[in-house]
Image (cartoon, rainbow, N blue to C red; front, side):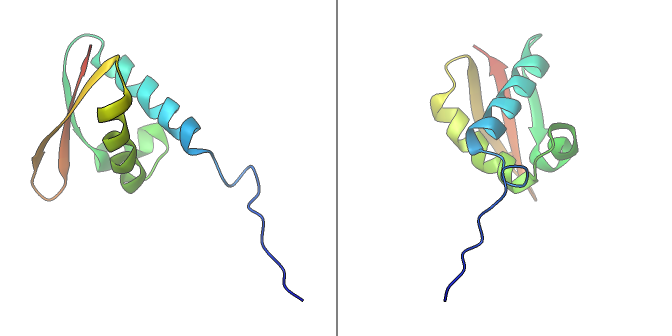
Amino acid sequence: MSTKATPSPEREESTASKEQRLRAFLKRKAQDGEMYFKSKFIADEVGLSPKEIGAIMVKLSDSAPDLHVEKWSYTSATTWRVEAA
């Protein structure tokens, strides 16, 4: 007899929802110009882990027509540059 654990909806937030939340945050912060940040410094503010933010940022750099996303530098952690399109 095998049992499979099914993740509860409360525990398992969809990737699309996380992406939308991060995208909205970035649009708000970059509306007056460019912004630079490291994932670990905005993690608490957006409610995501730095690892999740990094993965989503890679996606957004290819799929967000309303934002210019650029990997800016790497010194102990990636710095991202975001600007409203």
